[in-house]
Length: 113
Length: 110
Image (cartoon, rainbow over the protein chains, first blue to last red):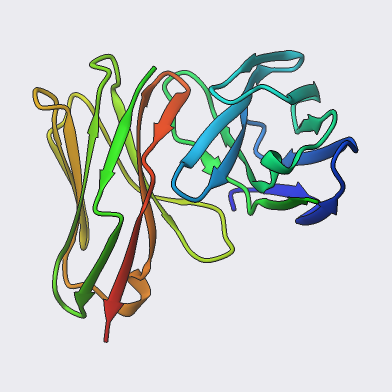
């Protein structure tokens, strides 16, 4: 998985609780991404980062926030989890301009009850 | 934004036969088209990609073709093997934003 780890790998939580997912890379890649994967929707971009403290929204960003304080770590936070956020979350990395290829982590399976 | 459609959603082939998966995209600015293979419980793995200045690319049993005029691209797997069974995703985009198709579940029957 191209030097990408995600934690936790599985999580069960209750509606209304905050949840933070972590992505860690050892490739020193500039870009990092968070996607969610749901049946019938493929992979949809939530947020991405193009450098430390530089982030931007994707197509399904409502209800999510991100932070990147170090090159190697990208955090995804659900401030108040809802059942609609039950999904599999994937982190991806890429090198940046001219190096568009994205490499994916192993995923985090989140269940919101 | 970009809209990527992928067909078929499921595909079954006999071992040794070929498999073809097709995708269309809407944004003519898209210039990078990767294909990913995802096995159960794992993250997507890049298997081949193509850029808009190339019409075809091949890597052993896998090939991808791109028709920019018609805005469609296809994945071709020849001499399929049981280990090719997985979900395949196409994507289209430019810069660092990609939009994914909804996936094709390929089953290779021994």
